[in-house]
Length: 135
Image 1 (spheres, rainbow, N blue to C red):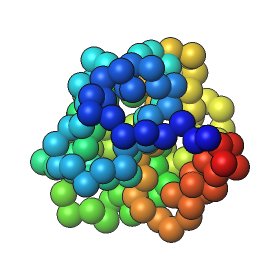
Image 2: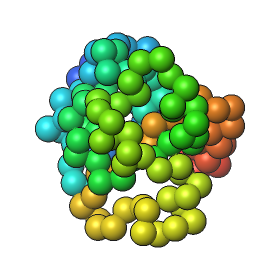
Image 3: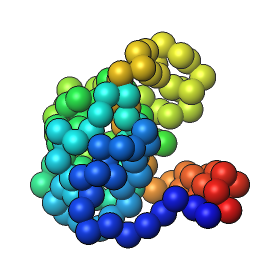
């Protein structure tokens, strides 16, 4: 059975996660960044603008790797996609990070972040992988 369940308190879920997928419509952070353990991978699908974001902006600051499915799409947003220009400069395309090990996680303790910009297919692949693993 898939390990999916609704919870009233996200803290134990975040603290215990090796990989965390946030897919909300919240314009405020849905968890405390201090709950993230070293080595956690975070994917954000929901809002991620400077003034409306489901993730705490500290997650962006702590991420050793920030990947996205399309840098041109990130640049097309009207409002800042991440907290600062420095954060944007650190972003890499996911395909490049997967093909070039130096662009990806370097240490087991690195927090990694994938910011999906909603290109059709990214979420489909995530869903397909989930179904194959757990259903």
